Amino acid sequence: MSTHRRARNVVGLAILGAFALMGAACATGAPSGAPTSSSDPSDDAVIEKLVGLWGEDAKGQPHLEFTAEGEVHGSDGCNGITTTYSVNGDRVDLARFASTLKACQGVDDWMRGIRAVEIDGDVLVIKDASGAELGNLTRAS
Image (cartoon, rainbow, N blue to C red):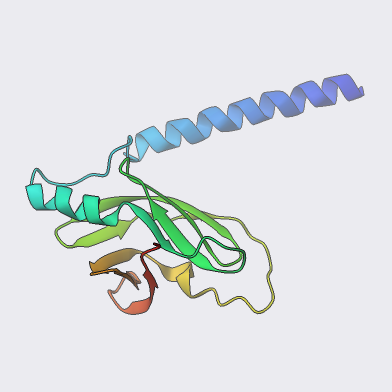
């Protein structure tokens, strides 16, 4: 097979894959932007407190940044993390996240199990799916 034909096939497969991912996101009811919450005004107050950077956005440091549009981006200190969130009372639930897969020696991957967070003043308490505390991050100044 010619190099040109192989390249065309690879591009075609990449486009097909992109459409499959978009279709899967629509089929699974993935968030369409803003965080999902009830019409409870207290949810808006939680979102207002949550939005911003938690931890230190520096090489080797864990951090999470929450947007008003329902997105979360950050790092466990090695691997990049991206996901979405929804507000449920005082608890903020995170969807399973996508992550890079770098192998970094000496980095504690304690954030790998994150599924929810709660705000305690200027501290973001990070929890796993069972509600057990994994650790915390301080609001960035």
